[in-house]
Image (cartoon, rainbow, N blue to C red; front, side, top):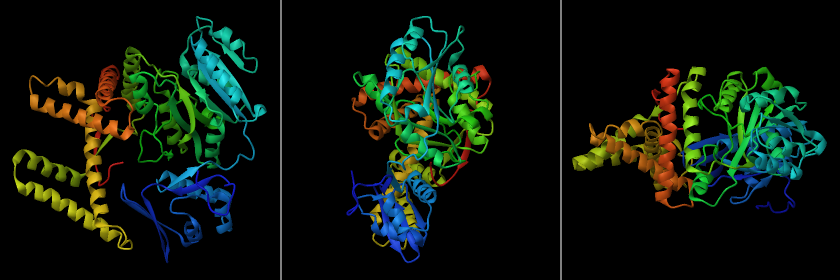
Length: 497
């Protein structure tokens, strides 16, 4: 925990510079610089007192910010600093206290999960939220075991028992119609909420544009190699940094097993699409964005999930996720899949590959000249920062080219590994290149995720995941007669998101 000298205790939220971000107080304002990806932002003079007092390796508390900028209202301060958090310049600890707790309807669909629903409901006994300000609605989806009997042992739960299996989307919609809360909080029966779950997510609604918010989903299981893989690579993990939907992020969503939505907006959107077995959360989030609302991800609002920790179930679930992508592309034609190509990175890697296989020093020289040119160009844009060494710009340029290589490799690994390897008897060099891209992408993921299992096991599960998912995608393409998932639009841009 970081503290500002002279202020104890620290009134949350508190903010600090993100690792690698530099702050420069200028005559015309405050400049924040992030070395990777290389980006700077100039803040207005009004914020100079705040960043003058912000420790280089510490944090500044909300009450101190208020004292330094007395003319700014609390929502304006919170909104401004949270935007800097989402842009990666700052990190936040905590939220403003909830002054008026909205009434929340917690909705849990369940089918044949007696032990899971028991654990899920028991966790709410430790929930740090006024008990008279939330209700729990459980919809039993025609369970054929003793799940209904387990639900009935929890007397503070509103239970709905279906006679016919209708799937999770129907159950959630039914509960939403019966709900009395202003906020609908969706969680699955194989999940466990943390005591601060609602307190961590509800402050997102301080922004009136936000209609839905989700939090981080961590794994309950940690023992087996597959558990350790899921801990860092689960498809339910949305990252470690706060994000908010943007027009440039065409498929941004948060999973329905950890999702809070304004009830009024949810009903206006007609809830979840009950025709979808998987992907209904993606569809809902996209429809909310199309209606002009924002969707937010806050990693601190976490829950724990009991993932499928058997290989067959793991592969089946990834296959099911894959089949939903072509259908979602059909439903949201205004959000076509795109692949981003950076012309400078294409030229750089062409020169590198020509140097590797052509053996000519000229190609290596061309690649080096490109890096120097881009580094000098970046340095000229930041002439106000003479304290930044030239090596920092060179490293930023190289990391940008590496990110482009990873972007292409990830696309190939995710969608073209199976058809690529099918070419091994006809075009072995092409098949080998695709396999190499897949393995390099897997090793990059291993390093980025800091997995605790060994590289070989990580690559094994990574390959299983990619093959299972893309098999589902190709089956979905044939089933729905839509190939947009594997035939993306090509867009040229200088940076890779």
